[in-house]
Length: 264
Image 1 (spheres, rainbow, N blue to C red):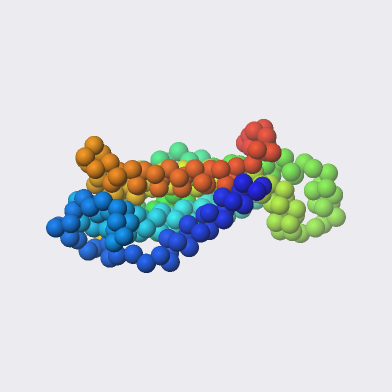
Image 2: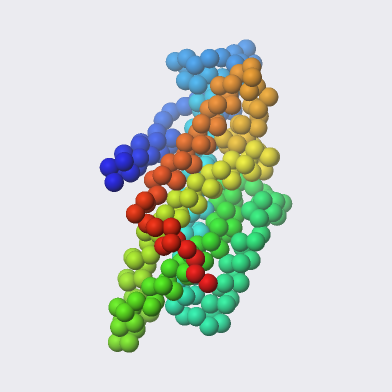
């Protein structure tokens, strides 16, 4: 518990730092001062265009956190709600929700990204929506399996028999009991979103020199991996550390693997 509190404290400081720290204009170039090392004026040095690498990294971090927040909000709330309803109601409604879950699960996020980017353009908020929809199926399956197990508990059966409203049973009694497992998966999913967004930006989706992403910077600087490794190490380290944070911050060793099994 103490380790997690320390992790969350560091993360809170990191978020405040990203959104409050002053930095140079990311559009400002200086051809006469390219590949500069770390200094008081440029904390992480400059890149091949003389841009301040620190400013680029800060902007990329802001965009990445926005994607993770939107994607997690959509998939966690939507998937958990639909999964609980499917398990509790059963019948045709369960089959319909399961079809939705299967459909969004089998469609790769890359394909969805290509389609949405062609129709609406690819931006950080749009990426969050795409990943949120793409990951909602896994939450549905997990919430459905956990709710099915909870539904058979004696206290849930007793509440149903005395006519307690379904909404009260779902949100006040079932959800609190499956919330921990859902949060564990949410952490792993958020970690995956960080890597997926970096990967899509790396291959060119969302590339925008005026709004750089960590994956975009990694693609632009890949040719300098031997001559100026600092340019490549910074975005790689940021991507890995943020992904690891979400994985460990939500991980709960007390939850057995069998509790996370999705029941048919």
